[in-house]
Structures are given as structure tokens and as C-alpha cells.
Image (cartoon, rainbow, N blue to C red; front, side, top):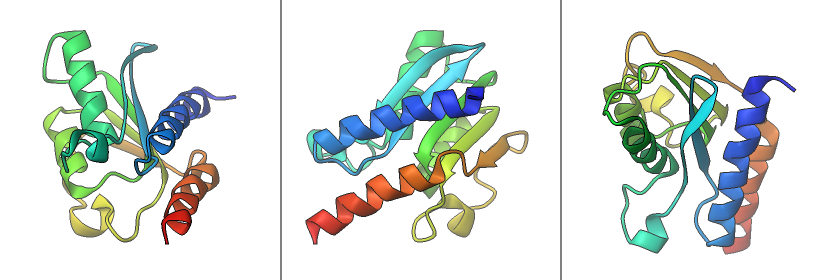
Length: 144
């Protein structure tokens, strides 16, 4: 198992926490120098806050852990392609690397704001894409 698979598995565990809480099952972890410095999952329903996405929760936690707003030596792992808001936050935090599992063709940043990330941010996608896509699809199928 690669580091990317290991950390995406942990992000998937966060997505499962969201699912149990009846939230859209998206999870995120942030890693810096081989250590998890932030983690989060969607809390928009729990907090009645449309900005309480997994990435925002994890960025806030990582900033508190590291004691600064810039996460320049960090990699953010998230189970779904970030939305425009989250891509903007990833950009403002100057995160060095983004790894996301499943693409979001309806709301993802690649469609609406492909330049939202910091120019130096490296992007990897597709790690555990099938599992991460399936948990979200199942969630919405059960709600219909």
C-alpha cells in the first residue's frame, strides 16, 4: 500500500463518520512531514453551516495544530473533488499537494474554477475513486 492509499483510506474513514451522522459522506485528512495534522468530514447538517465541508474542517484543524494559516508543506487527501469554495481555501492555505479520489463533474472546482488552487499545488486524482464515488452515490440513492 502506498502512502497515498494509506492516507486516502483514513480520509475514507472520515467519510464513513459523515455517513453515520447523515451527512454527505466526504472525508479529509491533511498530512505534513508524515504526520496527520488535520482531519475532518462534512458537518453541514450538524452545524447548520453550508461552509462546514470536510476540507474546511481539516484545514482549520491543521492550522490550529501547526500554529499558522499557511500549510505549505502539507498534502490534503479528500474523498471527493473539492468544490469551488474548498479549492479556494486550499489555494489560500497554500497547500502543496491535493490528492482527491472521485471527480465531481456537477460541483467540482475543475469545471468551475480550474485555477483556484495555488499555482505550485500538485494534484493527484483517482486514488480509491470507486469506493469514494460509491459511498456518495449510495447516500443519495437512499435519500430519493
